[in-house]
Length: 134
Image (cartoon, rainbow, N blue to C red; front, side, top):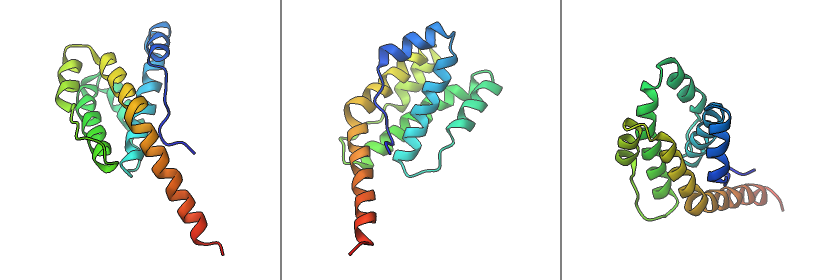
């Protein structure tokens, strides 16, 4: 099982535009789900999306900040250099450049997090499986 998927940023942006934003909700869901799992937290990605829709985007502005904090925590957990872009994401979100935030996070997942998180998960599964067999 893969916890974090690498996705083509260009494809995600094009699909978001072509589907009038519907694919964007799926993309955001997958990013948030990955970040929750990387932090060993129960995923609340569905609730995050629902609250963003119900509040007409107000919760979505907070979600940019929350995403940055989850990303920062994942960087620390997996021994990557400290990075906290939560304030940058919040400012971009307030300026209606949210899709740029998601592109940046996807880029960070593609370049830094996915390999580390998936390798750690694979190692954990192997240790669990190997520990019970003799």
